[in-house]
Amino acid sequence: MTPARSALHRMLRHAATFLGLATAAATTTTALAQDTHASAALVVAIDKLVAKNGIDDDSPGVAIFIRVPGKLHFQKGYGLASVKDETAITPTTLFELASCSKPFTATALLILVDRGMLTLDDDVRDYIPELPEYDSDNPILIRDLLQHTSGLPEYFDFDDEGVPMRHKTYAVNEDYIGMFAKVKKDYPLQFRTGSKFEYTNSNFLLLASIVQRVAKQPFGDFVRDEIFIPAGMQHTFICQSPQSVPQEDDADKYNRAFGYEWHEKKEQWKPSWGTPPEWPQKVMVVGDGGVWSNLEDMAKWDAAVRAKKFLKSATWKEALTPSTTRKGKVIEYGKGWFIYANDDGSVYGYGHDGTWAGFENTYYRHLGTNRSTVILSNRDTMDTDDLWTALDALVEKFVGGE
Image 1 (tube, rainbow, N blue to C red):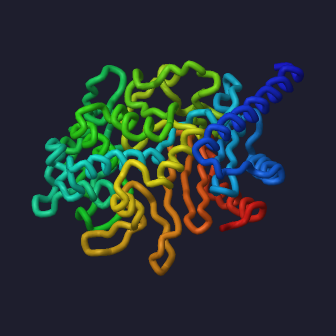
Image 2 (image 1 turned 135 degrees about the vertical axis):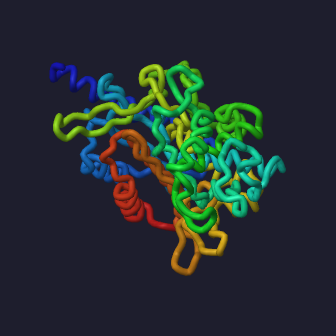
Image 3 (image 1 turned 90 degrees about the vertical axis):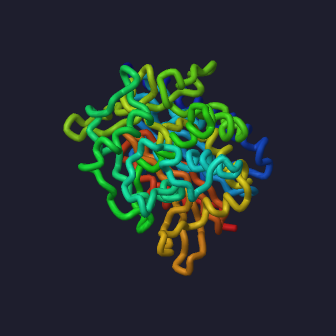
């Protein structure tokens, strides 16, 4: 690439970022008229912070959203969604949310609870009879899945070669469900159900399948109809089959990021995840991950959660309150959300992180400052905790708390 063409690409990428920021900010301002744009000084400070983290116009990057209603609205993309194609990350670029998908799965399940179609104290085997009976006197309940107290083994540990795929090129939730009985001897319960918290993706794989069976429609369709559309998340989708990846009318604007991993020996970024058909996925399990979204739509998700949409107020309260083991020990997880509390038990925030094949993401809301932060990154070297901490300090400096 010649220097002149390189400079032109950088100029176009900056223009795309600016236009994406303006368009997305205008869209969100319609829903939250009190939001105000970040000051020029704060934008410059965040730009410098991102550059300090090694992100430039020629490498995988990050998209950042920060909201304090009435005080601040910031969203901007940095770096490349695709290194090969030199497409920029903007507020409309779609990322694999990884485990940031879990709150959507939990909300879908709790919608069914509110409708009286199941209860949190139902035996999981009432809906998934193929799951082996690990302890007849102490069954796994739906609440155990939601709060990670089931004791189930991690399905990632199963030998993929043994999974009987019903589709020729990829495996889905229903394929893995049968594996729990097949490998029960080698992969027993990790601990007595309900006795402690241990984060396990298997829990949310099963929750998605329960939603699908009870709702009698594909999991992705149910979440789309009951959450994405009502929230106005027009471009968010669940990748549960090659056919589930939408064909955008404006694909250049709503580009999809590839996940990248840094290869030290070769000193280059290698793509490690994407959407079909560009990236054929062999495992298309959903519930624990599988949601693709962007800053534009995550701003709408944040608004919906703040407004306590979709669920009854008592159900939201339970979802965002620390759960307990069956002996009453408080754990750091609610129902699909990590819950952050002070030593006295008072909750000061909630959110979720997500890591998968080059994607590093976080959604976090701090209640004391009423601040929401979304970080979506497609580079495996990104430390979202460190970045969030630094962003938080900048917001305190330029905007202040409540």
